[in-house]
Image: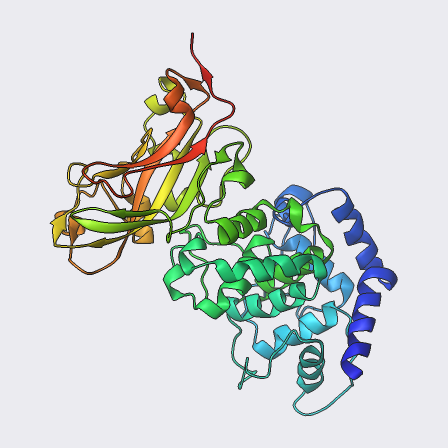
Length: 421
């Protein structure tokens, strides 16, 4: 009963009683997404009262908003100390106060009332922390805010779907550090824009959060609670990949012709057994950019110019195979008989080196050596375009030479393709 009262109070504050909730609801009704609305001091010219958070500071708007709401404050010397780390206890207090959760006053240690109320509403779990005085990590924040979002009915289908993700579905270079149990937390926090990656394409699971980062994440969390998840492209891509093995419908008009299932798309070749487990569409024209673009392209500037000037390629399609050699062999465009058609191999190695997958064009000889019995993640590339020469280019297919089993799968169709006259 006590838990129910807390939840009713929380719902009432966020939906009915809080001026903050009213303002955030107006944002959501305008159809804006969290990623599109991250507070930007450079854009708004926000000024704070703190000497170390000047106009133009990336977190100035969030800091000022958080101070006005009353869940964080500065120091007597007039500073905010935006780069100072935040302990687990401090973040828990900030989050509880930001949500305006009722709690008892006083107690020992000082943070006990805040811990108790977050335990009560299900945002904190007893197994989360044994020491509350150490700096909180970004992964720990993701767990807390994702549990908060999961209490909203409209986010529950996403939480359920994310059980179908594997760590490589998260578009970060440090994905191998992610445990299976944390994937839904990471996906929800990233998909809603609460947590973003770094310039090196890592998400920094073990990095500690600063005061500035903490208030930006809490403000994004508050907005996500009343936003429309259907309007968040990141979230939609992750959900589609988790449920279908591809992001095709979220980012393109392409039509999926064959279910992407590694148990159904199986290639038995004399050299290997391969299973197609993922198919990623990467638009190169238009306003939509896939969250997986850096994983396979890294930087569009590295792509051949003639792809656009001569061939009018609209986008790339990257197939991810689980490939198990039946004997040792050296991977190359000649020795690899499985490919996408029409093809488009990314020749540079920036992305594959950073993410640790194998592709047919590997310049370092040691990267081309595949050992019998081991399973490798091998990426093959294809493309699509609207202006085609022959009708077969309307379709993207998976083909294998030299085998009678699993040698052809028609995967995608481009309804916008027009045959040149």
